[in-house]
Amino acid sequence: AQTVTQSQPEMSVQEAETVTLSCTYDTSENNYYLFWYKQPPSRQMILVIRQEAYKQQNATENRFSVNFQKAAKSFSLKISDSQLGDTAMYFCAFMKLKEGNKLVFGAGTILRVKS
Amino acid sequence: GAGVSQTPSNKVTEKGKYVELRCDPISGHTALYWYRQSLGQGPEFLIYFQGTGAADDSGLPNDRFFAVRPEGSVSTLKIQRTERGDSAVYLCASSSQGSEQYFGPGTRLTVT
Image (cartoon, rainbow over all chains, first blue to last red; front, top):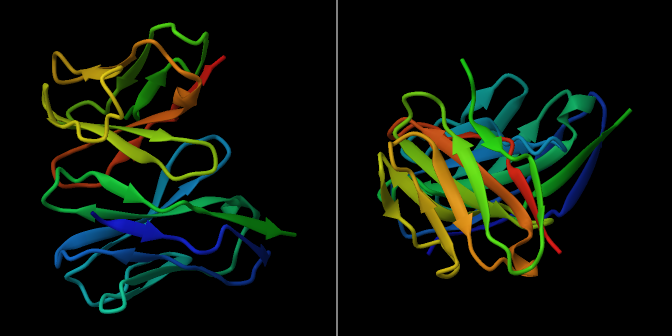
């Protein structure tokens, strides 16, 4: 079974600065997707960024980028120019393509952006 | 267009009672997922529908939990003889085949 580990229960960052959230996973699969989701207090789970395992190039979405290290099974999220609205719980998630696309989530990291 | 909706937003019930949680997916999405999120944890998979059929129900914790999707659109998660340990946020997501999952706002279930 796949597992996803987020080793940072909480992180803080000053507004406008950069922060990196860590994620590692365990799988024997070669083809899969990795995701970062954001969950604010409203509970709405919002997709931040996704990475296909077969792509070597790291995904980027505006201020959000990932560092995908397939051999090390590491998938960190970098948030640049942090904004107060980035305050939320962030979840790393794994999706194995052959099992109906169900997501396996990590335990999450609470990110607090301070003014 | 409209996103995934879930009703009720909050549900408080007494131990031993029966509850139904409803999910209305994005129109045209054939895949529908239920997840359970306990306090301070990540969501855990419960069941996955492809069309009307449950393609994978391996995440249902026991036979008190059951879900249906009779017409391939709206889904209902049913919990019998609720226990305090069932208290959690129940999230629903839908997707087109192979694409990202769009989540609803969840139903917070509290069993007293």
